[in-house]
Image 1 (cartoon, rainbow, N blue to C red):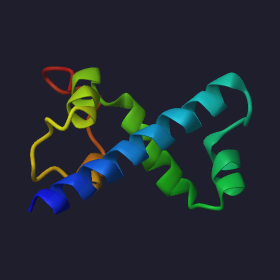
Image 2: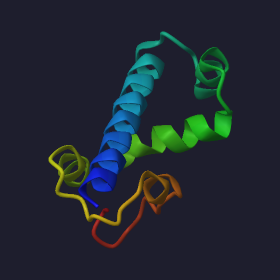
Image 3: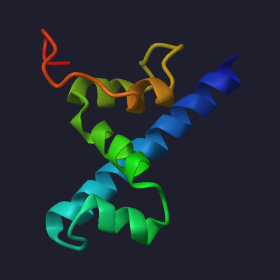
Image 4: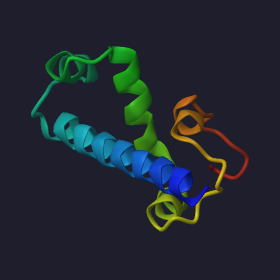
Length: 91
């Protein structure tokens, strides 16, 4: 079970790193848009958008993932499903 948890965590960490790196490229003007970045990376624009949404997770959620404190049943797919930006507690 620990191996699956660790693989899942590593997948989430890689996705977060990729998302923040892509966001930095967009914000710094390296690319003009998520669509341009998706074309460059040869990935679906919808997947690009879902991945970029990870940068909008609350900092304490990102920190929990990086430190291995996220719920054991949390999967990257759960994080990428989408979420309300207007939750009652801001998360």
